[in-house]
Amino acid sequence: MRMYDIIKKKRDGGELSKEEIAFFIRGVTDGSIPDYQIAALLMAIYYRGMNVRETCDLTYAVRDSGERLDFSAVKGIRADKHSTGGVGDKTSLVVAPIVASLGVKVAKMSGRGLGHTGGTVDKLEAITGFRTTLSEEEFLAQVNETGLAIVGQSKEFAPADKKLYALRDVTATVDSMPLIASSIMGKKLAADDNVIVLDVKTGSGSFMKSAERSRELARLMVDIGKRAGKKMVALITNMDIPLGYAIGNSLEVAEAVETLRGRGPADLTEVCLALASRMLSLSGKGSAEECRLLAERAISDGSALEKLKQCVRAQGGDVSLIEDPSAFPKAKCSRTVLCPADGYIQRVDTEAYGVSSLLLGAGRNTAEDGIDYSAGILLRKKTGDAVKEGEPLAVLYAADETLFRAAEEKLLSATVIGREKPEKAPLIYGAVE
Ligand code: URA
Image (cartoon, rainbow, N blue to C red; front, top):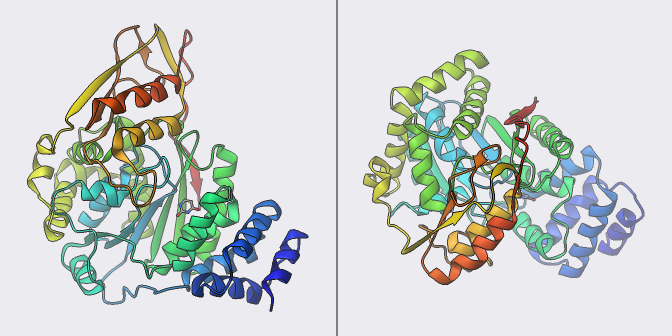
């Protein structure tokens, strides 16, 4: 088999066989296929697409390119959730403890921030001492004992995706349905969960800008997971507006804790309850309505917050920060951004809000960059709110005053203020089962 022939076939719109896809992924993993040929095939896939069978074969080859986790030592049903990436998306920090507090095991492998989007591992590392690397034995023992463990992905996990993602990032081929689906599901399927709930974001802050494309991606990922024997559902949720008011690592942990106390923002609380009830009901805890009530009770009786504390304690984190998030180290500098006009916030470019927090130090420009955990943005006004010229739009936090100018410009140019009150967009566009 020759890589040249595989590239030519896809370039001309042909359908790749399972063997050709396996040959490609093997060569990506062992380094025998040069980057220029990998990149050429990625571009051919970008233009020509893949059918469902090809996308499934690609996903399973990515899954099998490295170690697969064996959760058979974990007693009970294992459920996971995955977000396609958003701004202010701290749902995992709320949903995982709710679900674990109700007896479903959550053995979570999370990612770091990607581009303008944040990552759960970075947020957890804002908690002093929290270890996001555990040995497989420690990880599984903690899941059995406390019902919840959250770690980063090890290098041995779906290594083909690491290589492919890095090349997609520099060849403008990230935004491809089969490549996104196989990247996300290849990693998810390498873990050994029974239930997977996907949060497919749609809108200006997500990788998929339209609800139609998001629904298509959701359908594809749900079908891939079901064919692999998983119980699956995807919710399509709104990312035309940041979720909650906090963007940035320790700010987001604090907001997640407030949500677990029952005092979180309405939009964040609603998305978390919807995701948690889906995870619970697919795990056999009752009907959607019953599971919604269970999830609400786990917040109101404090058991979900207690579960987060147990997890933080077990992974070496400073629990006093969860008990009192105001004790998180504060950014050295802050600046209030003022509304430039009277009216209503019509819409915002949520991706630009993410980039603004990145400019403040809350994210990375390259994989090697460090993160300032206290940097970020606390929004004071969001889409649909009435505003008056000169009142606070947001407060920016950074280690250095010089970082404010570019971040403020980005935020202001991403905020459209007009006279009419905009129509309220749905928070959850629907479910794909
Ligand atoms: N997240 C992933 O893991 N992969 C993608 O391709 C896009 C988002």
